[in-house]
Image (cartoon, rainbow, N blue to C red):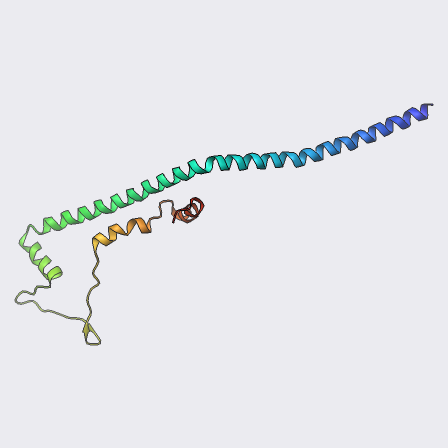
Length: 152
């Protein structure tokens, strides 16, 4: 009789282990699935506010860059205006911008293939308007974030 009791306790111990291992296996599958579902719901819930925040922050940074460019442009204009208040400044402007030649000046014209080479015209206004197109407000992350939030 004692042998029968010992056999039953061994069987109960074995079946208990099997139930416990099945229980743990289910938890190891269930916990990551619930966690993944939770993360998905949180990301879906926060995407739109994050997108609005990014767009506003991006626009603010681009506008700050544009403002800095305009302020720099204004500073250059103030310097140019100060220089035009003197006779030497007016003469310098007439030579450089208008191509005037005064008596006693020696004119040198650089040519390539018999055609005078002209300096490329740089427009300060064009430099200012190109700032928003070239803006990288978040450095190397800008392209990734623009793609993530659908900004062209």
